[in-house]
Length: 474
Image 1: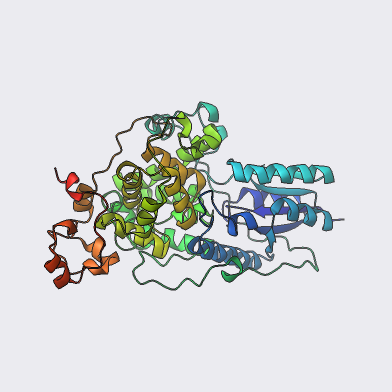
Image 2 (image 1 turned 135 degrees about the vertical axis):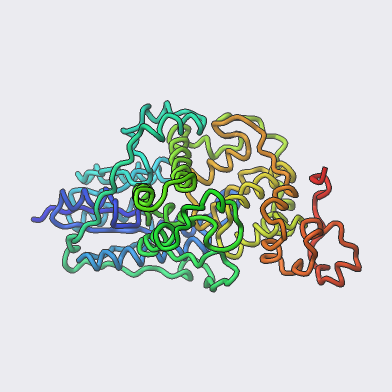
């Protein structure tokens, strides 16, 4: 009988630099690639009642899975698709097809670990080995200068200890062929958005980029951003932009689903530096990959504390309440503060928001509205195309001042930020059409418009601010 291995694809939806797949091909004569749509993730709710995976990310993941299946077919294999609970489905597949191993990327946060533990127990009872591999990070943890639990709690220290010392391993080559799945195996169909209770996602010509999921699209975007356009050489200057597809790399949705390997990104940057130019901007893209690793290591080190209201510091946060009324106005983009509302409307309509926008809306929710930051973090979890537990919750910890870095000076003056990053109000007018005729002088200060001006400019429907905008003017 042929030796068989199941490869459980999780957040590594690619063939390039895939340790789990490569290990399976080395160990087994037949490989069964599997993806499971976990009902808890795709049909469940967060603690505050938001869909855990909203329609934008669901659509993106469906595209990722379809592309993975297509790439596996081109390599001579296929993708087995199931819906339900992985810790139930995978042992059944292992039993029915007499697999000796299940191989997958190890995850470290509570929901994923619960699934892993349940799976391991069931497989162990059947005499099947669960093998964990790596693939989420730029660095291999065994290459780091300190054990994970000794990782510095300050990013600048982590950066100092690693950026010039710790090697980034070469990506694992894409296999030319993948062993076919066993004959007669039912591979299953990929669900639709409607199967998860979502309405169709229409094309939005206002969106920064028409994101499409999958390894193929990820590699196209990497090639475009570096080699076709040379945009990477000005990344540091443009990264705080707000409009269009080119102000930043936009790699994060593909990185979050594992369609794009961070090691591949790094080595392409280094090749670009050798062949074209090396400057602060090319370094800064690597710098962003460092932040991504740092947040993942903080998640490994501090565990579930990153999800707590008091964060890893267990700080008292009694002044921040679960104020649904204020939260709903924030979430709907109806606060009457144009820069905040424009960013939230972009998120609601596309599943995307710039990094600059994320910092501002997070600060506003907490510092100005005194709303529990966890509500915002869960809302982002639901809507963001590029949601990743460690990065999302790590960033919210950071803005809330409850993360590993205890400084609390991250209050954003929204008016100053708006004038600095949207000086002519183009971004606000793009997402808030009822303000499209307002002058540059008043676009961020609708509180200065008289009733007659609002009527004349067609902005009467824009809500009155729920905070005093002039508090930021001094």
